[in-house]
Length: 435
Length: 169
Image 1: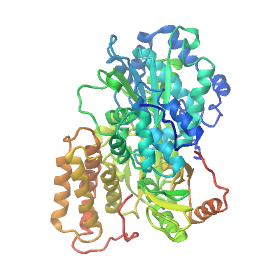
Image 2: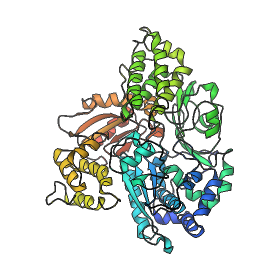
Image 3: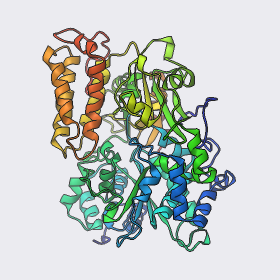
Image 4: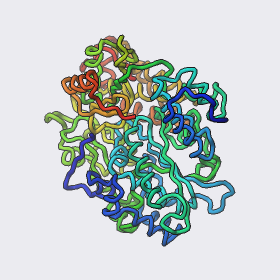
């Protein structure tokens, strides 16, 4: 069972029901459950979207797109049915926040789905969980069944005259399916290859209908925003970055865990105070701040606020909020190799720059780590990665290239220390190929 | 596109499939869950599974195989009764994921994607399973075990050897 953590600096909004037994519907109702849905039914779509815009909530999947704005892009009139699609295909290495939401607060996901549906005029929502999350799917399925049994889902929900259905769905192992267009393909029963944009899902999405796709954490935040009000929520965060976020701090820290911190919270403080600092009193070498695809930061760069804009200014991204802390006894080349091995494994092969780029990056970085690298390999790695950027249907190519460029730019001397037959100074694993 | 006269699945699974195809605007949306549940019952995606699933959805066997080859959890050969999936991705790697993998290799006497001779266990090195903050983590079929050490790993293996392990389906 995933261990829950706590720290005084946390502001518990999304996580406030964690560990309270809220997967039980009666308990959930005691904890203000389904009040937001009833409020939304009473006040209507324009009010919901206005509150969401006021909240400053930005997509928690990683791109940080303003949720209220995303919802407002869905055309009011549509010949085809509209859909809400909740992305719970959580697969970005370093990220395990949705895991806790599904485990501890499944009804919040259902409520958020209904509210998103009310906002855009959809009658059906899908909650897609990665295939590995079977025990969480069972929790979600039970929550959905309980909600139907009480009339919170189905025909005439809460006696409002509005119908809304929710279907849970399971994947079967594919990082790529976390990309929104690949997610729709997967839900349509196909290989998870991305679609070209435009058209954007808000116009042509699932089954050809206008579709809003939100990360599970984004969706689970929605009912809280409606209950507390968009503006008060926005005030908790930093400028243009409303509210709080679940930050997963993993790797070499004393107290790894998922902490809910206000947006804009200082990264250095998050590592040293909230998560207790580097394990065993060791030095810090590097931080991957927002899941494996975000460019690495050096120790002197981590005095920065955890929001989309400040992280962008620092040359990296807030991403999925998965902070991976690396101590000074870790080989960065090995870390870079494990990262690219992942992307090589997960590239769906649809776009050649990504399929070939990830493969050659893995081979070249692997050769460097094994001591067989030559001087020009480092420029080749950089050249390859730079030429993947922006040349693929979906962001997986960028997600592989960006961290690679970061490692080679910020830790070039460590790569050089492996060249021309020199053994890895940190050698631990004879062979490292990735899954 | 029909319910087959005879089925290779148990009555419960067949009933689940009858319902699954009605949940979505198109039948085909049931394909991926159906393959995963079929695998849970049969052990792998056999030719017979492909045939019946294709018939139930109303698509060709080739369509099914096209999808099947994309998803890493779906397999066309049997795994062990208990498939040990060890995450070695970054967060787990930093906290000993490779040590856990090595330990399992030695204890079970098998390598990546191999099955023990008695068919009880198989071993797989897998990508991130979403348990980064509780690393190193593994899954035995669908059940998670986290914050592992080689000693704790031994205890997990022992539970399954003696038939006391969890079995979420």
